[in-house]
Image 1 (cartoon, one colour):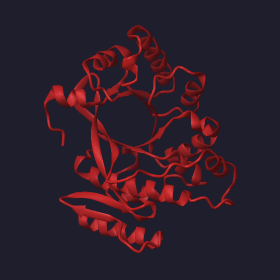
Image 2: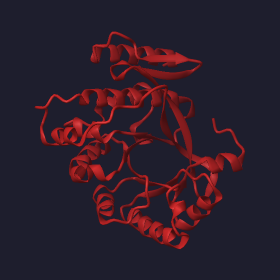
Image 3: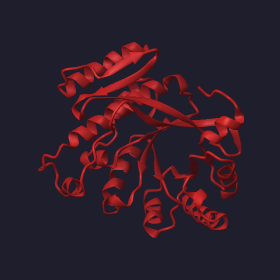
Image 4: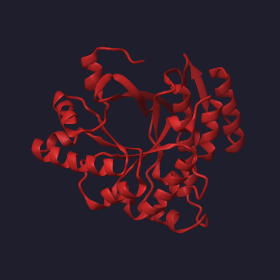
Length: 283
């Protein structure tokens, strides 16, 4: 199906399912963006970054994607709202529908923009908002599965990424059940940490969920003592390996982090350092 036809198909779907009075997807210069009117109207599009195998950094194994926005991002929700959502089964009428709708729109935009980059042996990493997982009571991934199928792609080449923060520790069991739902539909699963972890709660989450990937930001690691950082990375990599997963070191912007990545034993790397040193245009 041509890209314009896919855009019109999903516009029809958004318009019908969300009773919208506008068509949210826009195609300009072969790039798709989305308008989200319920949250003060802003436009979202996609920025891709290649994932490289540490053994051969010229080999692109997949892509991560970030939301590019023209205004404010999705609204902050207070802790008591999150707790109400987790403890009640649909009896509270908090505006979590906006979170879910935004998450679905953003992932649809990303998937459509990913089509020119897609290959049979590469994967796309897509973030899912934890509030989306908590807000959906069953059949996680069913809605987005139809997006993937309409694009002619497969769930096994899609990695659902959950950003892990301390705010959600007490909801880990609920999040694990939701992510397991995605896995049953053929998706791969990843956990993303933005700091160098060494606490038992994070290790227990990895061991219980057994994600396909665990990713870690290199930026914060640069501030630590190199020997201490390497020791923690080795410990984390052992936990990941025991769970049959692969480790990813993200946001490698400097040579210092690149050297640490090679010493750590992590499997994949991502960051601007490689785009500068390889001097290639991946897109």
